[in-house]
Image 1 (cartoon, rainbow, N blue to C red):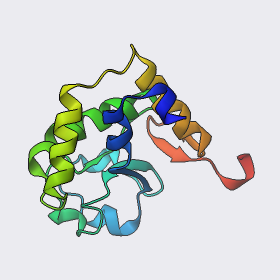
Image 2: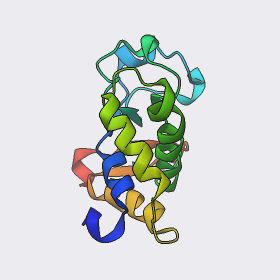
Image 3: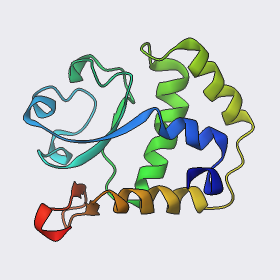
Image 4: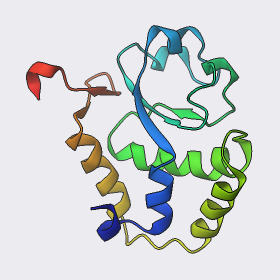
Length: 142
């Protein structure tokens, strides 16, 4: 479980992020990423607070498209440090302050966080593709 492996900071951070499958709607409005890396059906992570905004209105760092399962953790850390701490206008200020306080005292043992994030993504059916992206497993392979 999260509590056995992650710090309170990581647990709270995970609750602010959602995995999503790129749709045509997302493709039409990509504002902060290279078009060539973004394809319908691939998996990205995004701020759950900004998810309701039109994609081209989301602030910088609200969405990441990791190339591998192990890169999920780093993408989330990048989102935490930039987006949640200063750019996200949708997050509750008290929640933002709580993240800031917990970030200052975080204590995740070694690389456990990175490996754990990758394992959790695998458990919900996310796989790495040959083209260097993440995707949900086709239903027939689950």
